[in-house]
Length: 525
Image (tube, rainbow, N blue to C red; front, side, top):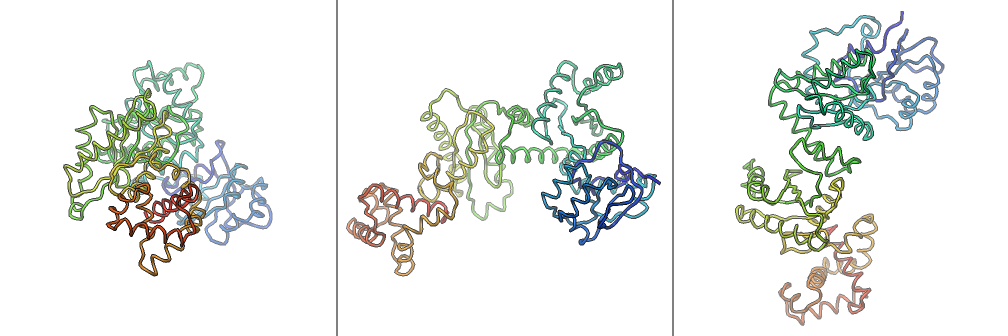
């Protein structure tokens, strides 16, 4: 007797399923179940269910994978293992390209589940489903289902603001354009969906996208935008997901918590990934009241706090509140915490030349550092500033540059508190090289000096650092090191003897200076 593969999947709690390849839209039927991969083709339509390490490992063997993708009787593969099975990328890609559904489930499936045409799923499983859904996380389940249906998901609030999106950038752009066109004059997403449904019933052109409403306790209404051409079983799976999502969001605390997670996800993407589309970036930013359509400077505030303040868990919130009160209204800043630091986005006029632009952001950062130091005198504040980019999709680059400015500035300009990426000069280019190359370069120039400092207690590296910091001005260098100018001159002569470098030679001077800067900035930071 034939059984429907999709019906069987619907009977399994959604959180237990991990879709490794998309599921074909058409219905898939199987007659038999096999728990092993044979050395020959299957004799009838077969569901392959693997629960042993030995059998699962065959899926990383190209010989067996080639056999499976050529077997017309193979319906789908289910891997029953609690731990993630590590799939070989090439083998999984072959299965995906050949439209073989591959699903992992956290529990070993029983024969009644696999061999019945009726759903064992019932309302008695609702609490189990919801508990697993909450433990796994809404975004993980949504991402997983998006893979299964091979469809983009866009979550929007009642004001049409994009909260979160899953899918290719191209499909997200298309869906946003559809939403903008169809919801613009309809009074909201509810009316838009009603009008579109009426159009479809009237025999007009079927829209490529549809809205699934997520009604949360009759108080909040979110919507999910995705494809409209789903088959019956796909809609059943979507309905199951929408129902669980609505239950998940029932309380205000859960709503706020989930929105905060969405915001954290967006901030991570903003700082570590380059958005392919500025439109998506700007639209998502508006969900949090941020205008990212305009260019911004980015700088990081690093805070070193005493141990007693660590016990006061709200210290960062208090600092943020003060910054927002003092600067937000007049300076157009966006402020948020990230990885125990504060990130500030400062709007700037595009008409500024590079010099004015640096002076502008530097002055604002200095003012902020002074204000924070005045109120929290027991703390130390350092600020790293990245480059200004006209396009906000490059804020991720500015964030990495701000981190570099912090790292370099704190070890090279010890008495300063604000550092701009341009302060790095040539080091900004050099530190993008592989660390092994940089280490070899430092060793070539500094190894003998470091050996002397360790064995003989000399301070040649420290002397060179001060020498380059104060641009070779003898009195300033000797004052910084608390030594007599003659002692400094003797040390420099000894350094020249040990390294073979002539400090009067411009090229050799530059090479030694770069080696010292790299050593202190990358290896002693």
